[in-house]
Image 1 (cartoon, rainbow, N blue to C red):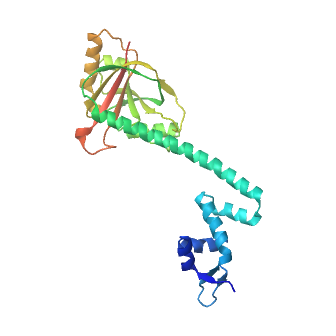
Image 2: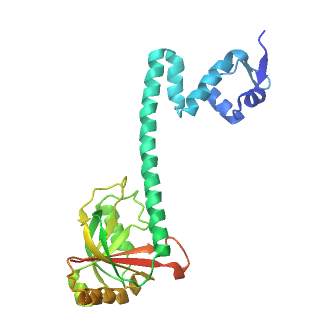
Image 3: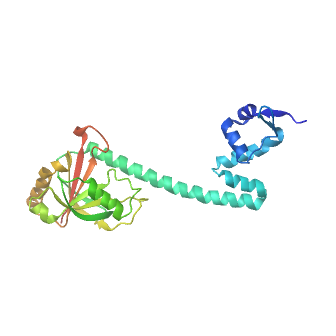
Length: 269
């Protein structure tokens, strides 16, 4: 008679948790060789070792219980090849997703590190690439709750899964800027990155921009807008479009107000 092993012994031999072995039994994937009718204890034989090894191999490949059962029911090469090819496609998709997530993490790290090291209240002329955005044209004033237009944006563009951290910007019309209406915005933007859901509805064009970073949030921006206008006058630059204002570090990242940094970009020629 074949030697029998308790579920605890099998657990130790194969480094598989006892609840997992019980689940395999209940799912019909790995039935015990014997169940004691009096104690309901499960016992396994060496004949099941190979099956458990195969199960562990497939689970390491992240195959579902149902897929593994299908293989054991068919037990042929074509079924194995089909399962592995299907799993390979899923793994490739997961790799692409993880690469996209990694790129977003790198982008956010770069943004935060750049903001931490930035020289504040200094206007600089920079050349920037085009940036895809989702744009909600809606008047907004600082005295209003920004969460309301953000909710409108989520609903209108079906952005339920989008993470807005560090990616929301306010646009200020050139006319408001010239008229010194620094608390009147004409739109809200979601800056898109690779892998984001939703299609771009607008683009921040590539070109020359004045950029200034300052301590604080949107309600501290007036002085910086005045700086930008003065810089344009001093250097004979023409404002060619709307200003874009982004909180790089705010309450979404830190409770330390002393570390808040906001950036304004102004297209010029």
